[in-house]
Image (cartoon, rainbow, N blue to C red):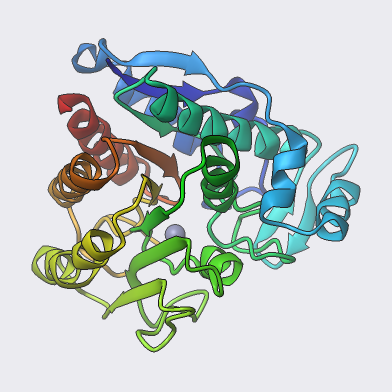
Length: 308
Ligand SMILES: [Zn+2]
């Protein structure tokens, strides 16, 4: 079985204001780097249309309808200070969910060794009832609940190495011990949550990193906090909230990882997926705003996924 890659042209049509870091060029940079013949064995599939009903797995209906009503007919509107929507944003967000849920189906039904979903908008800042931080709906949270409802997964682990804390994912699973949420992130930094003391129902594991943290302390956090938590939890599925803004080139944060660190972390999670989850591993793009740092990091991440 091959590594599957979900993309869709609609992801380029979610528009943000000029100069906004979360821009369509991010996906063009990823497409270019994955065009290399080193990735010719990737199983490239267009993300299917998402099922809007699955949004309700993580968000209440009144919030979903608020987002739907905010989508403009023309131009770009602000949802909050740094989150915006354009006419195709709804379709992009729902297709991102379609790709993530299809990836879950693929790993449970044996159609893919593992899956990377290169979608935007990202999702991990979206709380139950708040769109924020470039995110409309929490794609990773929806996919986790989808795995539980459709495939009877009892325990799902979400590992979030985006440089920002995934406040939304933490909010959604705060009192739900069937989902483990582990995050490495810079602190202090937007959105301000993610202290070690935030533990939910014992299912939230935050590993905050000081500005200027490099490879060694990142790997220490993974080895001492993230991986032991996964071992204790023994998930049926691992979902990665794969942001690449902890790369040293990224303009939004001050963590100094290289693409080798993402290669390494990917390998560690694949090993855990093999040990606990029948190799079921789904990776969803979150942040990453320096086009070169993003492209090289995705290449390292996907290249490692392909090594199986
Ligand atoms: Zn981020």
